[in-house]
Length: 229
Length: 106
Image (tube, rainbow over all chains, first blue to last red; front, side, top):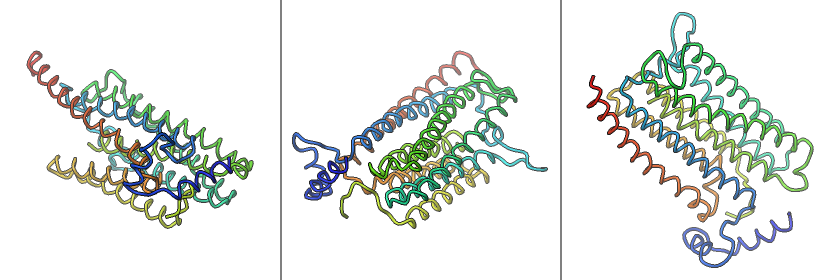
């Protein structure tokens, strides 16, 4: 593995960069993507997932535009009571900050991995996993609260029934990705601690990071288009 | 920059991006909180902040800025088709609304 990567690096160093590099990479019968197969495959998976969420958000836009009843005001639906006052979207704002923070700790874990700093990489990976768990927990709370208030995929007390279909489908699929990511990251963290990557290199941490950042990326668009619009 | 297949960046880069993501999230939350009007302005600001956040995450956290262009284009160009999909289904959604209004009235 290490030998293979080294010869790949040597070859890539002799190639032109920029637009000329783009043409050179696609120009003849040879390898186009000069990254490990694991990284390339994770990128292809992410690309396919981009289309899954792109379809969900497009479907949500179509459902919302075609709704005959008024669309429920997300600022009110997702408001939380704090003492006397009602703060709109409070839980969602906290969830957003938790997920962004987990992306930050993930990026730092990747950095420490490549620096062969096993302890710090494991600490930041564990931190990322815990923040992911926190996010899933808050989402479970949000779902229970809405279900208790009578929100269903086919109806809700505040207006257009399409709201529930979009909400449960989009946040449900995203939550599923976060849950899968938590399990994935916990596995990678365990392997870092066990020293698996001392022999084969720390790129698997970066690949897990790509997945985790993607989950954060999807939330950016859900937060903007579903909660704030 | 030397190509090594590994990503080595100073921790400062990540902390700055992290801070910017916090700032942009807070700003888009405030747009909603203070009910910026007209609605179009609020939508524009929220979309712009979301695209900036997405750009930061993809460029720096996912290191796309430091990858070769063959990979970058393979990743970034296909999702543009989603814009076409969204445009078509939004037009369709508006049409379905008109049909519902026409047949079922107010």
